[in-house]
Each structure stands twice: as structure tokens, then as C-alpha cells.
Length: 154
Image 1 (spheres, one colour):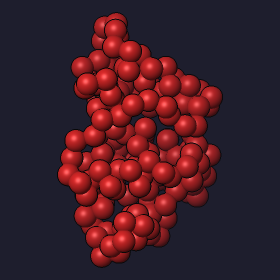
Image 2: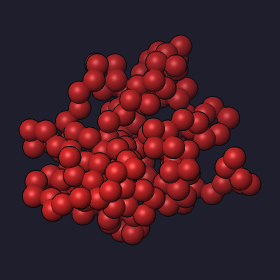
Image 3: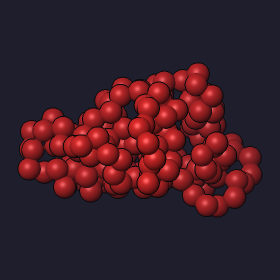
Image 4: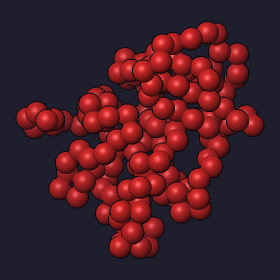
């Protein structure tokens, strides 16, 4: 699986059957030339996103997971650039407000970070909570999208 550079940390990307199937932050070093067209498009679109030239991603994605996880991930995919929502609102949109923890667990299992923008999901009080890439990366992504924070993250 190729590892590409981003200004907030290296990213491992993978494709399956012509679709992006994984995008995760990693401590691995960048490696090799990318030949896969989906991964080349992913790399290009991420570069545009980090340089402020892209707000919406346009690539085929392939998701595994359970039916519930896919429903949660598709709800997360609807959160516009520069906006946030809460875990509670996601569970409410799914028609099950009591499933807030299950929605949070599904969001935590998101296989395609940034593209499926789970960094845009906050705690009910507006606090940064949970992110597979780490809270520092979540904060950096939100700041890149224009979200201002008061005081320190920690």
C-alpha cells in the first residue's frame, strides 16, 4: 500500500476493485511511485485540499463494514466543508438518537479519513473528541477548513 506525504502526516492509501478503500494516517515513510489511477487521483485531490484549492472530493470509494457502519459513513460524507456536526445529530439523522455510542464507534472505524470527513464530527458540547488520526490532526483539518478554536486543544 502506498504511503504519501501530507502537511499534517503521512497517509497510507489503498484501492480495491477500482475504488479508494483505505486512507489512514501512518508513521510509515513515504514510498514508491503510484501507478494506480484511483490512488493517483486521490493523491492529487489531497494535495489540492491541503493547498486550499479543493473542498469536495470526487473519486469512487469502496466501503466494507456493516450496513450500520456504511449508513453512518454516508451520513458523515454529507457534512459540508467548513461545517461540523455532533455524534448525537448523526444518530438522530439515522432515526435512532439512542445509538449515539454505536454511531461514534462506526465513525471511529471510518476506513477513509478526510474523504469521509469524520474530523467534522464533534462532541455535543463542541469539544474535539476521538479521531483515528489523533486529535492534533483533527484540529489541523478543522483549522484548514476555517474552524476557529478558542484557547488550547489540550
